Length: 518
Length: 119
Image 1 (spheres, rainbow over the protein chains, first blue to last red):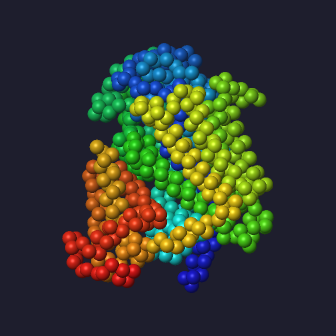
Image 2 (cartoon, rainbow over the protein chains, first blue to last red):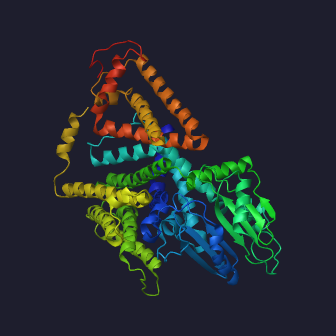
Image 3 (cartoon, each protein chain N blue to C red):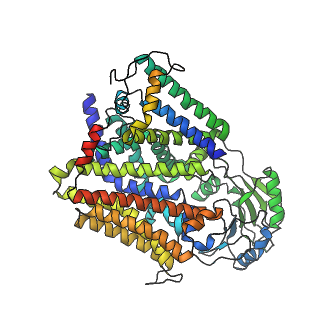
């Protein structure tokens, strides 16, 4: 009975992994990179590599931009103030269906030139949970399905692991490749289990309203009401008054908001319906010192400055939801914890990749020429080394494309994304057409692309690793360069080992050496 | 300063997992030390458990409930991985600790066993 149950769980684990492993790897890879999305932005947008701005920026400095938004009859105008990870001030307003967005040097107040890239925050992070498929929210649904499968994989993996405690610390690098792959898969799976489960579950909770809309429709009359409530924007539900009225002093209102928060600073300033009598001026409190995402919002009348509302204290259920959201979205500022997330995320990627590879190694001799095997083989290379290579091509293209690049009606930012997809597609084709050399060739390509990304950053911006390491405000760029160099080194190591194996110098001497250990 | 504290947490967690791993026959054999008597195994696991709890309490005390628990859970995974990697590639690095577990008279009871017994 027990063996039968374990066997069925083994079947479930294998096929859920094989079928959804590609999506899972993409989600975990992009999620892991998103841990440092702002830092990736610094690397991809050299104009934003600024020294920290002096404290106490006057919001009135940005009054001309607000007046511009009023003249353009904008629906809203907002600024996101700089912080430890984001040295630039972001300024946005929406007029009609057009978003006007600028990055501003907070020290001088000058608008920075358009960076021509989506960077980490607008491409890598959204890819993590939408796969950039916006049609009918299909991407979010596929990610949700993969996340559910991940939870199933975690539970079934624990059930089928015969010696979970006896082999808790077991990793035998001198055994045969199949054994090493299984050991790595088990080590990354078991030791990172709390991370896999909490991150997957919290991701599902964040997108819960998409997957389980019945709860929302039962409580709210329309999706707009839910959106306002969920984002502490209830102050926006106001009867429109189109008569003109100037917006009160932003600095005075900010001082009152600070006093209400006991001295805490605002992160975002929002003016809804600017220039109208019914306008609202809202301040969103900075929330970088807690895991819990409590967006305390103070809203004033934009025309009179009268206090309209302040977010009510969170109920225990909402607190739990916001804690899980905070745990997943990592908006807090804790550098050590951020790096821990990054390393554990990489561990998740290793677990998924080794699962795929173990499946192949187990069947290569008996099913190597079958269509299904060849299909999964190509899928694996495209999903694992392929997406890594595509991401690196995205970075390299960012440093190579000229500032005003334009081709076939596509702007610079879109061209970078096209490079990503073209390279990614090519890696799948490569995997299907030349399966024998795919791992070797793609590992070598990863080493070359990662090394060249660092070199190109140096050549195009003058920010070489020694310079970035010696200036505190350039550490995000230094960190990105270091990760790229470590990645290049590891890929080179993998390439050399694969080349040795392909060249007939099998690992026999190492196995013999391994026999003497222990 | 905070960074040094996190390093201390990681080191203590590494020690706790090393103690747990070195109560297992396979890993004692890979470090070239004798198997532990059952009583000593229980004591080592108890000390490891205490160390894990102590770091959790210290992390919550210094970082607060949210960050403390997350930091502890993350470092637990990384420390356990580090022990696994050391046992895989350089088990000899843990041999002094394995021998200390056998002969120490401080925390552990003074039951001595000759090297190689049971290994």
